[in-house]
Length: 293
Image (tube, rainbow, N blue to C red; front, side, top):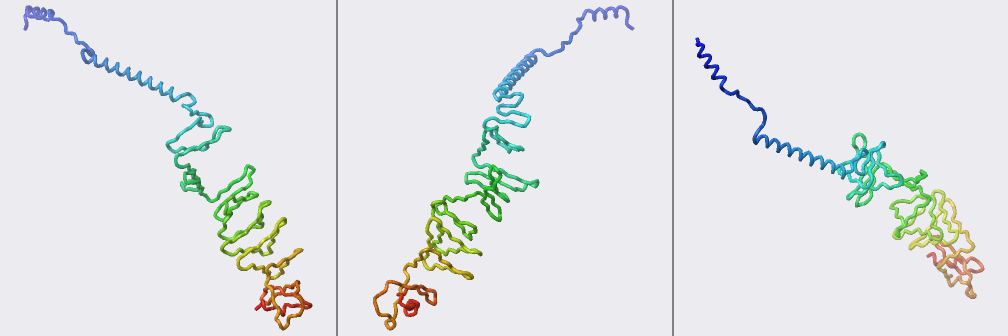
């Protein structure tokens, strides 16, 4: 057991020592580094805020949209030129009232119509090589709804009142041409020509060739044939001229004496050939048939 003197001495030693104090916080170089990072962060925040404000001002961001892009009740509205780097999907694209819609591309502009299985149905391509359309049918109509032109796999229909071909060579048809009426322009000539082959005109009920204010010429190199199987061929005119017909000569035994006459009669050979014979008191075709040989 400790004596009273020892306890008193121990209490006096403890009371003579100073109490220990523990400091809480960051001091020294750690504190300076923390202040530096906080200052740097504030500077970056101010720079970011300034750049954001500058971008908003340059891009013209407003409540209705940005730049020339406006958000309206009907959709998006673009004013001026616009460029899309990715595909654009829209239900309807239209220009401002009274202004044209202009589409420009460095290569081509394609409009494709596909079905639910992504199969191509109709395609419209405009490029540097030309204009191409692909589909089952192509139609062109007027503002009143009248059909002007249509084309499909079966036929091509021209619904205009007049088809004008401005080329120097005219219209070329590799096969037959079917039409109820062929007419030239007013004060122009109508010319049907086949330079290397024959020209055939055929109709089940007849062919009518009419020139109300001009002449009709039929010129060929070999033969010109007019044939009527069930009817007749009528030449109805005030004057009919048969140019350059050969002249038959009578044999010396049956030639009639007298001066040469200037009147001739037209004779027909059994093979259908025509020739001229000097007219006499009777028919001279029998005695002047040396042309038929």
